[in-house]
Length: 183
Image (cartoon, rainbow, N blue to C red):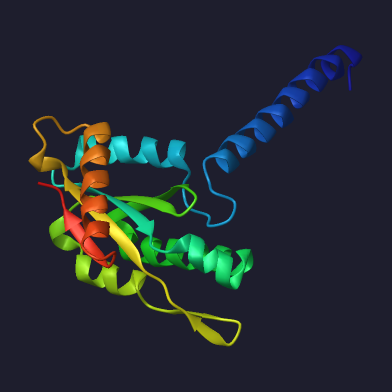
């Protein structure tokens, strides 16, 4: 091989490896390491895309109820197991109809293309199903707030998240077990 060609190829190979490493890091930064769900940044990009394409979309906020008590009583490993189980249940519920993410702590988010095609009762049942852990069932509970984008004057993700958040806190106020639509 000609020395000039080799000298030209070495920097190109270095840039290719560098680009591959950066791409991997970016992809990793958009996934929560514990649950495998999208992080806020990764989910937001997907949600914005969904909003542009699906006017019947809905945004959901999910907050685990009594999570601190679960952590304090059963330990952080049990808390992590609860987070992983919640993520799996939310991901399964979204299926091909939407995308789930973890905002942080015990807060999750989802967007579904068509709320009419999604069964909110099935989501509530899944999120409240006890988790087998260390030979005994851990009680799980969650509050869910939902905002249909079609009900907003302008379908913006920030407004949908605000409305879903208000609906979630209203659900918590009703006894911390269930879901509530924004109005």
